[in-house]
Length: 638
Image (cartoon, rainbow, N blue to C red; front, side, top):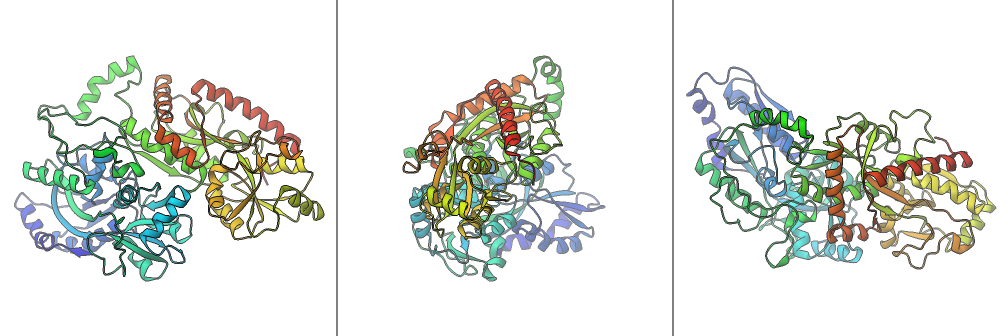
């Protein structure tokens, strides 16, 4: 970390400048931080908390408001009174978010007055301590071999997100962005091996690096980071430093606005678009696009959005948002949810499983395009547990206003037969929006297991009934149902071992702790490509294109078992029909794009184009079908 001399020189002058305007401060000062406690931004806030408290003679209270890449915290400060009692400890995402989100609930220039830049810290490429990856070139080679590689960051629009996007662009590889709510959970999953690499600021990861839990293999800056201990001179290294400004609400002067615009353009490493004299003109078209020469813009590796060069301007005659909303209310009530009235804030997309699994992958495949179409951040919230019933209940009890959605899988219709009392109605409490994709289930074994064919496994299972176990994503999931049907079809007895998601189940299969798993191809294809698991049979009517040499059960002379998983978008019941239709149309348009189709295909998923009515019919039919399967198989929550 390096503190700027200018910031240290300005801080003692802040109380004098403020008191010249009155008796400030005469009450505690709130310092809003847009990330979770324990992260690098929170650390800097607490570093300055005591000195500022002493200087100002009032407590400086730190409030952590994480979410949407600090958009939530930034909006709070933007809407606060400009009296010096509410400040924002911002990061470089303050200038990069406008390049990602076409419609922010604030103006990153005009709604703030910069006070001082406090410090700068480089972004670093980290791997787990035991990873075979030694340099950035190894990451590139692995990504090209597997077709895609996941990387963890502290959130959408973070410096790590931009660094990963630029790395993918310069190296010409496909990286899948997994956004967490802060640096701490992202680095914990890196340590646990649930993600192979992470782009993180040095200040946020330095403690773990010094402890030997993670290793730095490249510094994303022109110079090496001495504290990191190493830097890869590979040409694939991106450059994305992070700076830490302290800002307060209020209108910035023309000079400050120009500085912020320059900062924003510098962070995105792209040329500024020509400034248009019209006050509200936004150059460029909405949605994903390509820059000069057809090269994808950096942020497209993980999130969509348009790049708007130059400073944004506000007409002084422009109405306040509140007054404009009140004047428009009668028309909105009469016309229903108009296209321009929604969304008014970030949209929360709930996923009932941990990051890194197939449902999470599908959510992150479509979220960038949706936020580009809707002009607001689409914030993915992973609420794992109870086979997605926790996340499903949260959405069922949310306001039907389109700002809370569920990325469901067909465990949505498999849970009711197993749980006597669910806290929601899978049909009555939801409005289906659009199906997204479908992927078959596959029977796998770890490569250390002796079986080379389904026949060898059947012989071993019949020799010792119940001795072999199979891992699944949880009770009531596709793997659970598929395992039960598989046992009936093959005449064998296996022991079910439920996990809380695909990632932990796969870890134990790869480690040899559990010999078998029944899992969706989208969630397990990575392990197959890495040579960690072996397919024995496909549980669908046809062979999977990704596994052309693996037969179906029917081809092997056994009864047909079809437990393919579908994924779809659901809204709470009561969501206005025009709004559901708009979301469905946007999803349908997104699924027709080659980028999304290729991303889904890279993980063995096929687009499933079903609108609201077709999705509702599919859910009702599947609910009855799986209830019959559960009853005949004697399945229940174990």
